[in-house]
Image (cartoon, rainbow, N blue to C red; front, side, top):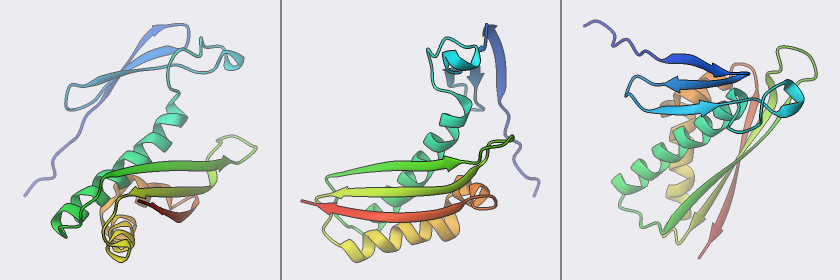
Length: 141
């Protein structure tokens, strides 16, 4: 069976602003901060990487908790990361903070995060090749 090929396109708009179009047809605007020559009017490509990581693992965790039939009122994922000082400015470390609200089973929530990290989240798998990724858990009613 042949692998499914994913595609994306990035088109220049003006200055350092671009539109990215994914293989699903959805698009978003990217820009860089003013200090780097952009307008600072949209998310930067580096920010997208961190947002992608948070989204990837959040989707995994919600799917797994639903399969485990664990009630959850809300989930927020916060990402902290420190880039290296030289180019290319990859991240030295990344901390993913999972904030669970109204989670009925903390052990299963931690298991879901572990499964996302070890098996399912492709963004985490890619980023872990160059950055130390840690996880933190916050549980609130």
